[in-house]
Length: 68
Image (cartoon, rainbow, N blue to C red; front, side, top):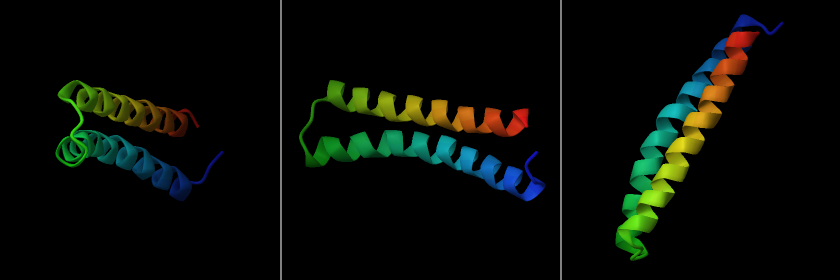
């Protein structure tokens, strides 16, 4: 149903969401620890939310591309 070029673009977008979301999920809370003086527990919570959200949405995007 979708063209090969659109499929490859969406596949790359899914990988970017997976990889950069995971990296950002680790770096962003670490940065907040130094700037905002948040507790370690709060930083771990932020990291988990970011990593799990990027894994979910990147996985959903990859799944939708592979179904078609």
